[in-house]
Image (cartoon, rainbow, N blue to C red; front, side):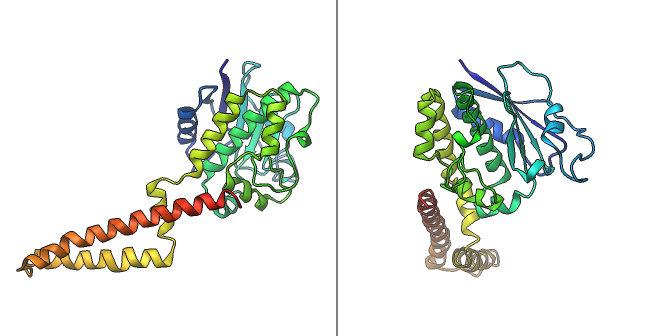
Length: 276
């Protein structure tokens, strides 16, 4: 049976691509199907201390859904106790907030989309766990100690960066999921998604590499600078030997070698982070 998951905006989300998240997650999964629900734009005024929103207020705004559907509302407002996410007891509802998450994402070398993707995966696994263990509470699976796990329950939001960076399920938590008869297919698919998220794309490696002064100097300062000079000389007709034309061919090759070397470096560093 395929799990149905609906993710929708609570309020307005800026600089955030929910479609990209859903498309990426659905490409891997055969056990769960995620869709985007109708946004709930009007969430009213804050009901806690003039700026925060209570769980009761936010969950009351959730649209009616089939009882078997997991609902995940994403918002940008601060929520009760300044939590980053909360699951309503006895239901399949979860709310997650992007409030104060930009610094966490920066520390974790991820994006808002990456953070929400992991929140969705966590919600799916927690829902299955709590459904099979109806008398369980958060402390049965979530843990206060920071292990670099999906189920790190961090009192300090900045500690979330460790789990977001590692993108894994701690072996102890994986064992608890299996003991609770959570489908191993679902657990495996979640781990497959996390593995794909851990592996940076070629373009992402270039973006991250350009943050390194050494790499950006080599690629931008030397190769691209020389390439511009060679191109301008060619256009002005200053080339008159085969050696000049060899230089034109060599420079892009040097740039390509640097980019590939940087990609290998980023991949190795990414793997190293997973075990920190």
